[in-house]
Structure formats: structure tokens, C-alpha cells
Amino acid sequence: MELEPAEQAERVRVPSAHQQAAVTVVLVIADVSVVAWLFWGYAWTGWADTWDQNNAPVAPRVAWRAVWILAGVALVTGIGLLALGWRTAGVIQLSVLDFCGTLFAYWAIRG
Image (cartoon, rainbow, N blue to C red; front, top):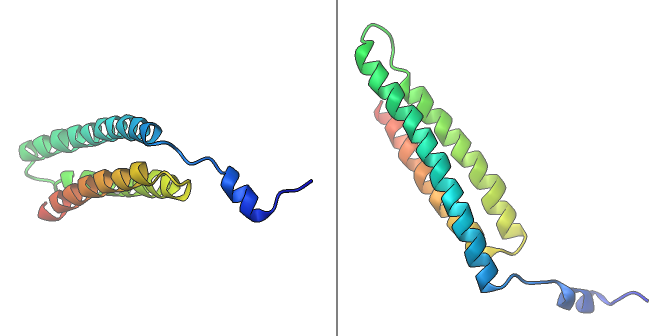
């Protein structure tokens, strides 16, 4: 016997606040790790650019690469979490990654 659509909707499991908080904390730790790794590469590249005045700086390209990586991760994880109904985790994921992506875009434009 099949359930009516309204009955099926009632059976959908909504994540609890504790589950969303735990997922959010784990994802923010992962986000900070990825951003730190990208910043480390950008900082080293910027430092190397100061020693190589004859060639065009490479650090802006590294910063743009970080922007695209963070934008892709934000789209996949943030919107994916929102689609699954994990609103808190999805919004925080999008906020953190978009803010960090904006910082890298600023650094890339500033050159």
C-alpha cells in the first residue's frame, strides 16, 4: 500500500539542531584548513615575487585560482546542504567560503 504524498512528506526526516551544529563545526574546520592552505600558497608566491622583479608577478594568478576553488566548493557544499534541508550548515558554509573568496579576489585585483 502506497502512502499519500502528504504522508510521505511527514516521514521525511528533518535534521535536529544538534546534528546541524555538529556538521557546521566540522565543515567550518575543513573550510579553515582549505583557506589556510590556499593562503599559505598565496603568501609564499607573493614572497617569491618580491625576489623576482624581472618577471610578471604570479601571486595574482594564485589568488584567482583560490577564488575559483572556493567558489566551486561553496556551490557544491553550500547549495547541496541547502537542497538537503540543512539550512544552518548551508548558509554558514556559503557565508564562510564566499567571504574568503572575496578576500582572495581583492588580493588578486590589488595585485
